[in-house]
Length: 363
Ligand code: F6P
Figure 1 (cartoon, rainbow, N blue to C red):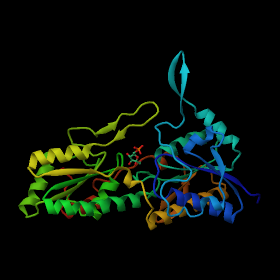
Figure 2 (figure 1 turned 60 degrees about the horizontal axis):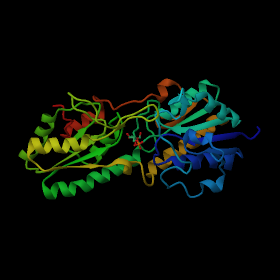
Figure 3 (figure 1 turned 45 degrees about the vertical axis):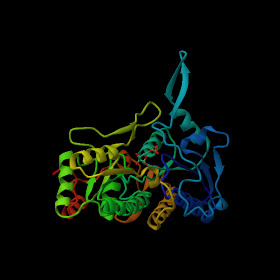
Figure 4 (figure 1 turned 180 degrees about the vertical axis):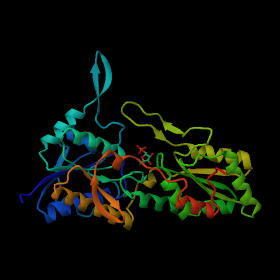
């Protein structure tokens, strides 16, 4: 069979393991199969630049397995196809999807491997509908992609948040304080739930279970009555009170999506007022996306990259490499696969946490 030509890009926010996927794609496609591999810089942005598409060979991926970030660069925007243009003397944003599709077709590749979360993969589906050959790889620290049991990047983010909780215990215990850790995750509580369990949190607040301030204060008071003069809380950035809304840090516009954040500081202030215990908040932020991927994420990312190449080899463009029943397989890149999912509020993880005495602030 004639050697193929493929391109690869990393879209959306960075996540630990992106480089491991790129390495696996290049080692499998260029190294083992003798294919030509092109890398597109900065998500879809590189398609618009003269120097934005470059050959990827074995030397370009040497030593990148343990490195965070992406050697290709990433771009996270609400609409990566949005372009500012002047219309009737006014600056307006147009959707340049046809132009992007034409640029993908002009690459004359057998497949464009798009590594991204729900946003990038929905965008990739739009390109697919315009005749572009796409294979998807599921990435996000949020673990909120419906088609796969696990996205790469999540395990590393949870490990970082767990380490932070271990460290916050020190000050909480020594100073008899309530320490609140705000973690990422958008509208899904997976990072908070997993890190909260691994880090021994007393309260876990997730978007899937709206909370009440009084119930949280009661949980702190209960612990105090039992002799524990400190409490540890982990709050997902998208968590919100039953009578309120998620806290938005930066409002979105025609180009950029909205950014969540701020609930952790609100929580520390409210708990201090309600309980009289000194309370502090730490916002973990992009530390969750940085650094070297865990061994689990390196392995998962490597399997996804190799699987994406095998899908191209089998002529299965229009598919997503996904973890199903512990195996990485190809599933159709349809709307159901790239939709977001959230944690099950009645699921085993939440029930286990409740059994351990963790408060979700709803009772
Ligand atoms: O989707 C990954 C994520 O890190 C979310 O958890 C978070 O809400 C968002 O991206 C932050 O985006 P940015 O890096 O653009 O601020």
